[in-house]
Length: 249
View 1 (tube, helix red, strand yellow):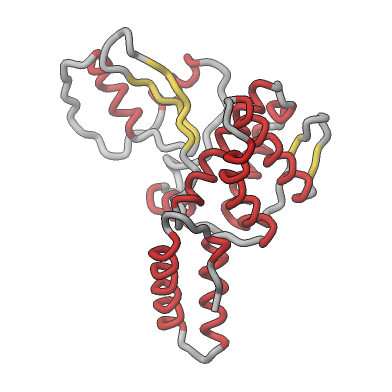
View 2 (cartoon, helix red, strand yellow; view 1 turned 180 degrees about the vertical axis):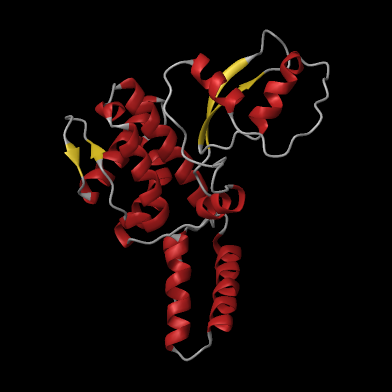
C-alpha cells in the first residue's frame, strides 16, 4: 500500500527506458560495472573532473549517479586507499516516529547479519521470486503474498511463519553483535506490534480517510483531516512513541 516506489518509477520511467526498477541479478563486481556503464543516459550533461581519486572515472561516476535501482552497487573513494565497493539498499521508507525508524533499520541489519552468518537457505530463492516479493510488498503492504525459504530449506507462504522467522533472525543477528536482550526487544517491538495489528502508516491513513467518509465528510476534507491528524500524532509521539500507539478516530 506504499506509494513511494511506484511514484518514483512512474515519474522517471518511460515505455522503452526503465531507469528505476528492481535490479537484474549479477554475480561479480565486473558485471556490476558493466551494467552501470551500459545503463541508458536520459539527460546528457558535460562531465567535469576534480582532484579526488574517483574523478579519474568521472564519466563512470556520472552514469552511476543516475543508475537508479532499489538495490544497487556503489563504487566510491576520495583516495586510492579508501576506494570501496558496497551495496546500497534503498527500499526502506521514512517512518512516522524515531522508534519506528530505528526498528526498521535494526530488524533489517539483524536479519541480514543472521542470514549471512548462518548461511541461510533464502539465498537460494529465485531472483524472479525475490522481485515478485518486492513488488507484492509495495502493492499490498503487510498482508502481501510472499514466497519465502525457511531455515530448513522449505518454501513458505504463510505470513505468520515468515514474520516469525524474520523476527527470530533479527533477534539472533543483533544478539550476535553483543546487543543486550532487553534492548533487542525494544528495537524489534514496533515492527512486531505492526505485524500483530496488521497496520502500516499507509493503512492507518487509509482507515482514517475511510472513517471520515463514513461520517459524511467529503473526500478533500477527509484527506486534509487525516494529514492533520497524522502530523498531530507524529508531534506527540516522535521521540518515544510508535505507530501502533496511534488511534484511528
